[in-house]
Image (cartoon, rainbow, N blue to C red; front, top):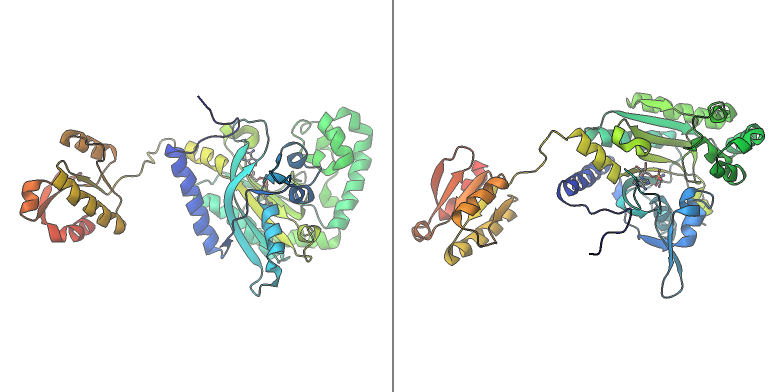
Length: 421
Ligand code: HAM
């Protein structure tokens, strides 16, 4: 038997219901906030991710799926969505649109060669937003509150918004030097990855999962003490707007995030769910003001976030574990003879086009088995077609709750069903 590749899973049954629910809710919320849908390719030139996500990030250094196509081009399955959206913004000259800022939302699969575990997959699904062309702290607050309200809308309310700022380039460099100075005498005590990070990207040592409880990390200097006035004022404004928007947050000065492109605001939405363990971050994002210029576009500020759909599904399954989420059917149409089936297929089609969720038997079941199937599908109304009635132009409708049966004129059947649902 051929089985699925390691780190992937099939989405069907109840999981598929949650998957669709999350995407539908996300689309609705994004449209309220006036974001437009964007879809970019699942694979891009490898160079795109090396220049955006960063050579020193774990994602690019260890986790990308790289391949050469038949034309010998170096391509990479996207590990995340931001780089593709920014590439598209530049390539399609969207900076020239009169309608600014550009506010996008997307949903899709991403690929990371990670060690599979609960909430961590090699094929993962994300929903995300990106706003390009607005440096105002108002947009930072909008983006964070969109993520927060989205989770709330889905009934997930045990959420902490962790927020930090990496400041502008000046503040970040200032902090980097202080960090190197502080860490240098201790570097031999840190894990192997951190030893490498010390030379490539010392800020990443702050979110090391191995050393996080060591005294060295606990006493690490806080970036908030190295901000210049501009970065500090900006961060204070973001926090003030969040307070106004009733978003509960917690400033976490050790939050740096695993991708290299961030500056100023960075944030994560973390769920209090046991099953997720180390993977309890549902959502992560931040500002990336240098990214568009870095990819050859005009200097344009940007900010966004992405939420892991796979993790959201796990949280929703846990929250709703005592609830029956199977949705019910509106109408089940029952037919046995060929003549009854002909009437049935037409009626089923008409009902479906009236936005009524309808099903009929296609497995040649007998009458008793059709009644059972209608019950399994939790049909609200049963339409019982029989040749004798049909000759008189009549159709029997049975209310599956009250068990009451009514004979309805064939010409009035649609109206009758619509008014009795
Ligand atoms: P990220 O933190 O790498 O950020 O991923 C965002 C979310 O995707 C995580 O919080 C998590 O829920 C989910 N996720 C990440 N890796 C996995 C995995 N292996 N399995 C399951 N879920 C996973 C980004 O991707 C940035 N592009 C976010 C962003 C948008 N920043 C600015 N704009």
